[in-house]
Image (cartoon, rainbow, N blue to C red; front, side):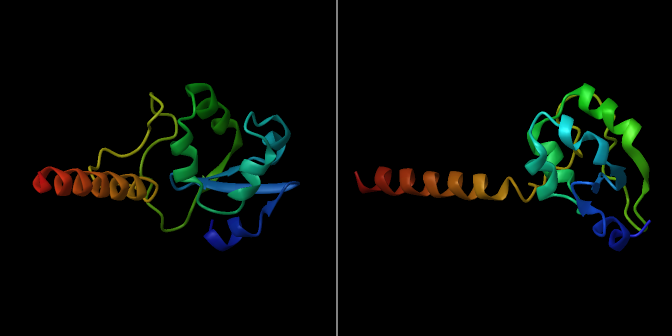
Length: 121
């Protein structure tokens, strides 16, 4: 199915999302979601892979996804299985994800400040 089709399902009573190139209908799970409905509504109709993995969902959460599976997104290669063990579940790439970039920037700034003060002595 297309990303445009997924995007049309972006309301509480009709909520789909993409995780690792797979489409899930999470409509019946909205009220049961431990993080609240707002978390799901924020990513409704979009690729929620980063949000899903950033939280570190449990194996139980990944099992729930199996029952909500609708199909694959057209033209999108899956990056990792949502049924993989462990809370990371991401790819083995050493490249930072978008959510890690601010962390790396803050770390680089902190190291630059330390180096500056060290060389001033």
